[in-house]
Structures are given as structure tokens and as C-alpha cells.
Length: 248
Image 1 (cartoon, rainbow, N blue to C red):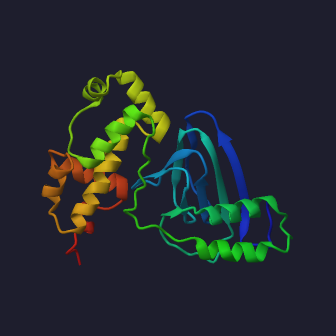
Image 2 (cartoon, rainbow, N blue to C red):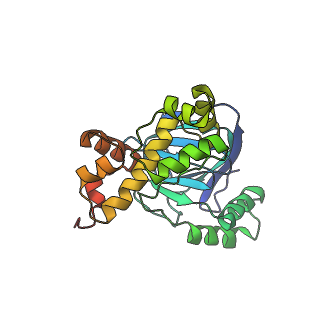
């Protein structure tokens, strides 16, 4: 669907049924909003990999190189904007939460014709509701299967737990293969990737209270501060020091 009468150039919706790259590294002439309703995807913007679970989206400014991978099958959508008429001018890539109202507005805009009289009001409300999430707001998808749920809850309670899947398999009376598959199927991430998300999330909370970086690294399971800093930077696009409570 394309129109010159609104700030929205195109709206696309689709489903994927295999884990694969969405697209290689590319750019767009105008801003783009990607979001998912049931899929889980990763968008790489060079300095950071953004995990986009269901109910979240990513705002990508014009000209920013990015690539995407499907981690969990499902449906997703995208919206491309006319840079001259778009009322949002965020200079940086930003995560967004897609509330039920926002999702319904965007679905409505996808369904109606460009000249529909409801479009101007729907577009204005959509732009009003779109708000960037803080860069450190990392959504954690919790698994529901009792075996992996038990592991997830224990890791959230103690992110420094060093047990790998073999040890967790003994603990839950499961196989490594089953646990590996369940983590991927239910969260869109491998066990190691999901644990990193938990550790970074816990680290941000500690840093916000003034806990030093080295102390925080050990508290969330990293024996080497350099490994912690690298994982943190990849997850948030920033160094841990950025989030210290006394950081100017």
C-alpha cells in the first residue's frame, strides 16, 4: 500500500515459518518502524543487536545500516515513512512498546485505503502514542514449560549461577537437547543468549544503585570484567559505566 497523501509511504505485514535472515545489511531513505505481533527477531544495527519479542518494535532512522534475523516464527509488520512529512525525528535507533491500542491503530491504517477519512486522526494518534524506550529497557521473555521455567526463575533469582545446560538437565531430569530446544522455541533465544539478557538486566539495576562495574560483573556471573563489558555493550549499545548512579 503506497500513498503520497500521508506521512506513511508503505505498510507491510507478513509471517515467517523458518528461522532465517530477514534481510542482509541495507538502509532506507526514510524512517522505518518494525514490530512483531507473534514473531521474535533480532535486528543488528552495527554497534548493537536489538532483541524484538512480540509486542515490541524498533524505530530505525533513515540511512542507518541494519540487518535482521528471525529467531522465532510468527507474524510481523513494518511501516516506512516519508522523511519530509514524518512528525517523529528521533536521531537514533530506539525500541518501542507496541500497546494493544497502538497495534490496533497500525492494523487499521494497514486495512483502510489512503483516502479514508479516518486516516488523519489515526495517524496523529499513532504518532502521539509512539514513545522511545530507554536504551537499557531489555524485555525478558519468560518460558512457560515447567522444566525451563524452573531454570529461568532460578537464574533471575541468581544471575551469577554458572551452571550450563548439562547441569540443568540433571537438575530438571531432562536432556540437554530437550532444554536447548525448549529455550529456543519458547523465548526465541538460545540458553546462553537468554542468560546474557538476564545478567545484563540485573547488572543495570546494580549499576543504578552505584555498584562499581567490577563488583557488578562478578555479581551477575562474569569472572572477567572485560567479558562483562563486551556483553553489556552488545546488549545495550553502551558501556556499563554509562549507567552508574553517579555518572554525570
